[in-house]
Image (tube, rainbow over all chains, first blue to last red; front, top):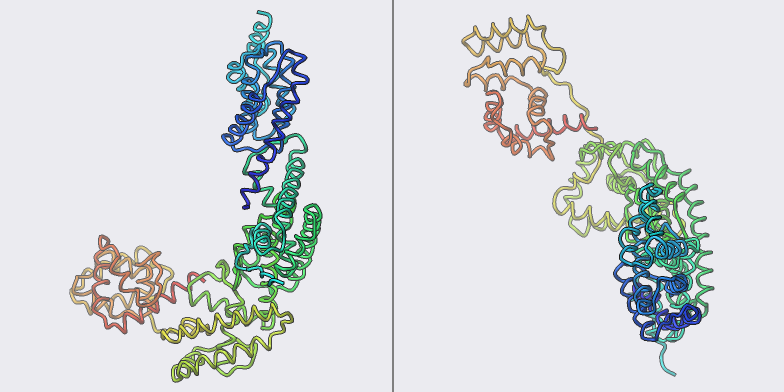
Length: 161
Length: 465
């Protein structure tokens, strides 16, 4: 038992309960025709730990994954075949943005922002969300800049085809 | 019934006291493994609470470094509480008896009390501290400590220590963190301050000034521990037959002391030092065992230092005594107002018209009274190479010292013996007279160059202090 082991235990403790919590989200996801298998849940937990390690962060519990799932599953663009992958990608993007924005944005606000963009400007395109929209989020939160008019028009034309 | 194993204090780390104590208490069987896990879980719960408090419950995720800092802060207060229980056994008993939550609450309360008591102690010390003209000393107590106390964060950064307390103590443990560092610093300073206050302020001030001159440091700016200076010279003064609480020595008294000590053997010198240091410690009005221990530690360190210096024959380096007043010399050249240009041109022309060095010297003595004019005439090339020894030879120590000091410019002598070494490094690309002066100096007797070295040292000190 050392100082660092104590800290590591913070993330280790929650792994088993995390699997159970992810499984619980199926109660809601099933309404939208989505479901995570125990294998999916395990993959999500493994990806979570990798993300946390890569980004040098810790989570006190698995509630961020849980909230991402509950927030994204009503999306009309989310299909069962990419459900688990999308959850993992959003989780990683969440922590990337947390670091970039130096923790200045709360968890719920950031998850809501990502979900909103996924559903509107990106129409379920994860690459677009990870690229163009991520940069916009950073600019907006970091510098308080509103979107340029032409960008807004582009966004609207994206929406209405 | 088996023998109870003892806690091994060597296994305890003061900067990770709780964790190391839990390990050690578990090893000797004072706490069961289940208790260790419960405490660990409890500490993690406290950390979660702290993280949520810092993020205002907006986030359950933070950077690892930030979590480490918060955990360090949290454990710091527990460490402080357990250490202040007085013994590892008492601390282990507290760990065994208390829940993690109760331990944390007690630790937080204790930390707040320590901060409060430290503030009070600082105020008392500040009102009793001897006023002395030293920037490091003043700024430490008037700026750095109030700034630390004002900015100290016992919740999120309890382990942070102020970094601006630059006044050096005789004994200072820099590995100590947070408020413990300031508490320890003030405790030590209080002992030092009480001791220094036994002496007359003017005497202390004189010692600081003499120390500055002797070691060629600016006494108003240099970080010097006054307590050690006072303690050391009080000891020398006692050895020289002065009463307690006196520190002033004359050069003659210092020399007599050195001669007397040199006539004794090591045991006798050590005995004298120990007896007088003990008298000084005993006579000082320290009340607590810790304060007496601090003085005894000082006495021991100083005795060892003095003894070593005595063995190496450089006791004079340690004794502070009244500087010898500058004697009035019969030098003819002084720094000051230069000759008017037309007079200077006349002198220059006259010198050039003379063929004998004796005549040139007569002209110089008659018209030139400032060192600047003298230097300008040297630079103007009024003398032949074989005339320089006569020119330099008629200069007094003060004139030569000043001239050499100017030649060395910013090179500071660490001692009179260094003069010749530094002169060898002087660039000879300049005017001829510089090269000639260096050559002339090389031909002087060693005693004479040493005298001139001392003169340059004194002149440089006068400029610094």
